[in-house]
Image (tube, rainbow, N blue to C red):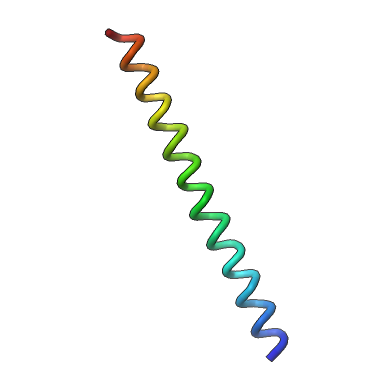
Length: 41
């Protein structure tokens, strides 16, 4: 039981960190596109 709980908690931590990391990458990528658009115009 304890090993299953530990494995599940680690899996959830990796999943949460991965999702938050994707959001950060998307925000940075969108900002870069906006900067490029403003420079081009």
